[in-house]
Length: 444
Image (cartoon, rainbow, N blue to C red):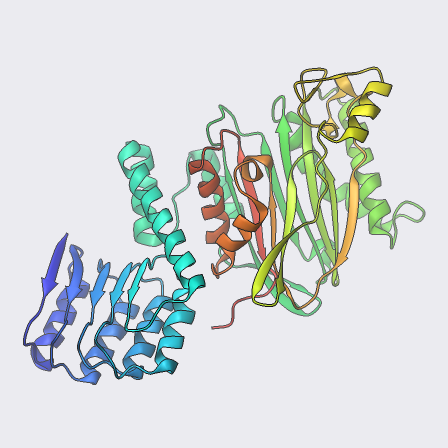
């Protein structure tokens, strides 16, 4: 990588430089400090950095008599896909509070910037974002050095902001799920969602994710599921293939859930469990379902996958756990298992299974319940994020940590991928699956 430090540039020679910067893929730093360039040239340069591909990671505009117009152009760079990590605007006293406010707001929504040097103090929230972005950068640098396989993923993230599929099998899943603009509408409000999955350090992938906007052909109904299989992938894949149809059937059946989503969800879980028994499927699966109808959100769960809502409370986006966690640490569950003739050893049912409720597990059906918890809340204008994840996520990330991590990421497709990889690099040894739903888009 090369650095360019340009002294005594005029607008004419600087125009040539701008073209060269965008044409050369090895220029890492562009230093135009203390040059007497006109505002028009600097604005033109910013526009080129926004509209054309380049390799610049450090942009130094210190002491160039920058004003608010230039601050606004730099803000546009921060809002673009440009992966500039350092911007230096020191010694530019003509930038007012308005210009600095624009820089602060856009920096908080940028996934690359880790240093924004100015003549004013950076607010605490922006500092947290810079720390997050620096961590992401360090993780990418780390996987570049680990292996050729990881290096290819990391380099692709560096260049495009999105990782390549991990394998041929996952490529098909990525084509199906990991699209940047999967959308729907909740109570008249548009939302966008993304899904990311990773086999991780396990030998096989046993998780299955489902997402169905405009469920049953209705624009106000949406279905999201995370199925975390155990003992093999047979159960999670089987339930993933039948749940949508079975649940839709109960929502339409008189006396079995019509106009009563909690009843329909419980009936659907029971039916899936019965079918696993009939087909002699011995594996099992945790199941987390979020069903949205109008402004109502219903969460059903067996196992230890979890759904977390990010709700705006004053200046803070606060994490709220929506689902119950069904493990043997729950005293009522341990008593139920003991009463059924089983026992709990080392936190596992009969020393084998770490969850107390699941679909399948037909060899332990007297002990492992398929009866889900079902909780209902009303979504409002303060609800901004909904995150579903398996235990491969939540065993390594706190709920508030995940919400803070995702708060200023405008693209939930990218956010779901980063959350998945963040859990992986924090040490998760399980399959990792997550669905991120941005209920309220950041207004730009």
